[in-house]
Image 1 (cartoon, rainbow over the protein chains, first blue to last red):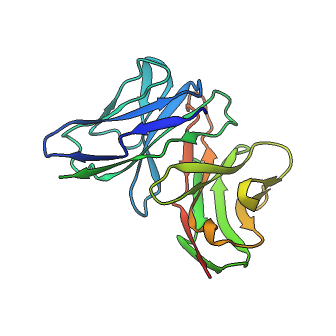
Image 2 (tube, chains in turn orange, blue; image 1 turned 90 degrees about the vertical axis):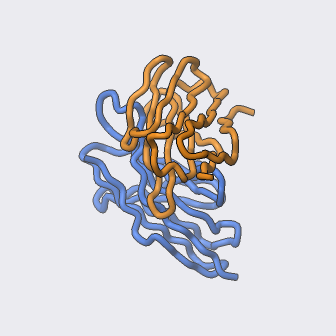
Image 3 (cartoon, chains in turn red, brown; image 1 turned 30 degrees about the horizontal axis):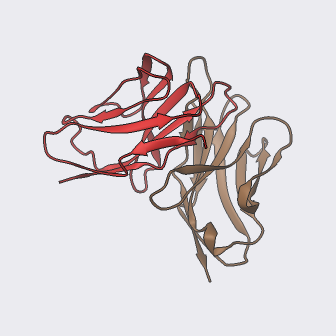
Length: 113
Length: 116
């Protein structure tokens, strides 16, 4: 079945450490997105990518970095510059037409040790 | 700028009662609208979408929503609530404009509780 796979499900970060969250899709979608979800704050866009080798900052990009070397993969790195990384992170993808919905993975929960 | 407002961060209904979750949007152009559901510790699942055509949209799990342009609303309803409907619901509008990358603007979410 086609879908989006996020790994790991749970992740712990030590102070000063960078961690990378994986997102892989086999839906042949061009666009991919990373969101951060905090209780009571809905979803906030971190980065998005419309095509391979190109990506744009979302509303809260500071302290995060991404790459898009392959169409299927859009990993997110939470750097040590992100001082409050504890959150639920969601990856999504969509096909080109504007009227198509975004499809979501099951998320990664990041906590601080 | 486009925006989405969900009225009520928490809604509680009895099993078998009508579910009504409110969503209002602002957009200067015809919007594309979506409702998603999220169960604890899971991703978002698409319930239904409005793009063009019929203003009453039917989705999965017995939910439906009606696009009312004059009221700039896209409220989600279900005639009879089931315990399994307890979840968080998000309304979203597709951001308009050149090179917006298919971004969605989400409401803050409404948590639905269903009492036995």
